[in-house]
Amino acid sequence: MLRIALLSLALVACSKKTEDKAASPPPAPPAATTTTVGSDGLRHIAVEANKEGYKPDKIPGKPGEQLVLVFTRTADSECISQLKAPDGKLVDLPLNKPVEVAVTVPRTGEVGFACGMDMFHGVVVAQPST
Image (cartoon, rainbow, N blue to C red; front, side):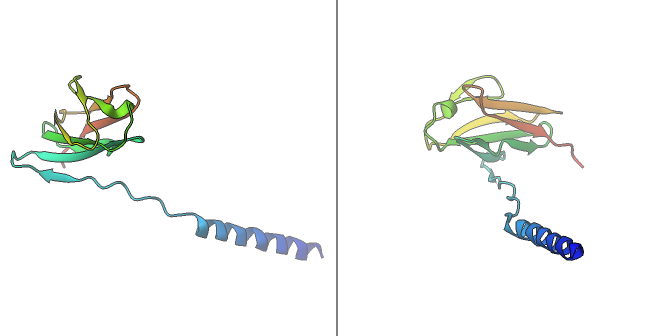
């Protein structure tokens, strides 16, 4: 009798684990980065500034590459209304209007940018060439 009770308990536990796995959603894919090459020959990378921060918040580039980050603020939030650019300058980000910021990828490591209140951050990262 004890065997039957333990076997029943084990079956219920196993079926519960299977249900839990089936119910959990798959992991979200990484956010797509919109990149275009402008008439200036530089890569232009769209960066959305919203209440959750910057999307994408990590931008890879070749060491020494010049990029143009195109910031568009999509949320009416005071925090992200200004951008502290990698060169340290404060740049106003008007709502729903793209603002271009020129950035040079460092030879090694990364350079950062942040909101005016220093709450949200992003980086441009040097990717070693292979």
